[in-house]
Length: 316
Image 1 (cartoon, one colour):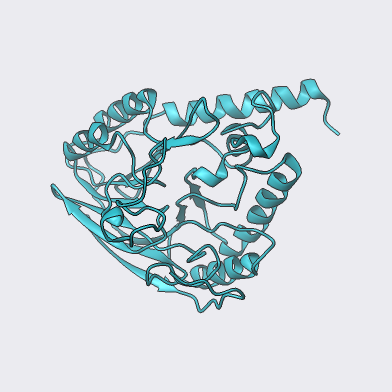
Image 2 (tube, rainbow, N blue to C red; image 1 turned 45 degrees about the horizontal axis):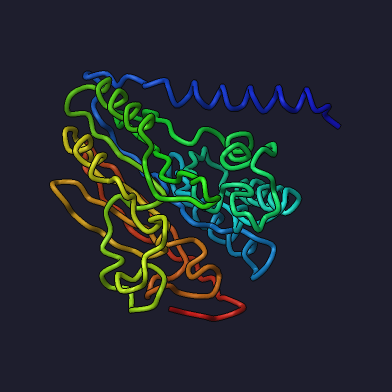
């Protein structure tokens, strides 16, 4: 059993390490020509003990593990749900995810989702000054909330689109410090180097336009106090991306397959491993994940399903 001082030290160390990773902008040499490989974009697993969710995740991961890919990027919402539960339940969920992810047998880069924040909602009963509160549990158990890395001539950027509010909720936003970090990170890569960005909440999506009235995310539904469907300050982020050779932005959160092309960049939203939160398909998108193929600086993608059958159908 760790002493409180020891636990606080480990917590501080983890947060400091996370900041160092986020602050380090790896250079991509101009001489490093982009090569060819595949990787996985696996998002919205929403793992939980109920609804056969762990079985579904393992099934998806085993199919993914059989593919010839270099690594995976998890697009957020690893668990369901850390926002509104106590520490014991949150730890159980993250333990379950960690154990299940081992089925992939791959290096996994992670993206923070809204459901990955611990105790944020008041109904969790977790005081705001508790160890692990908000993003801290994620940083300690998973890693930094935003960072970049290079692989075979490509520059990958993972952003944090979830910002807690004073009212113990959250909004979809890229905060000012992160925007400045992004500006610096992009400035350090070689001109023309291919860039791929990952977010949880979409920067660009048409979902609100075609979701039926009254459904979650519908443009006709009364808006939330804090915007949660799309990054509210995407207008500050997109101009930074448009100055570089960004091949695509991969997004999660809406659990649907969608591609929006805007000013030369593809904004690719992937369906969810959990489909309709383990209740079947979501707006016609079944449970699955995305395979991304990179060939000499060009990008294609495809969606793979894995045959999960819900034990409690509620298709939308």
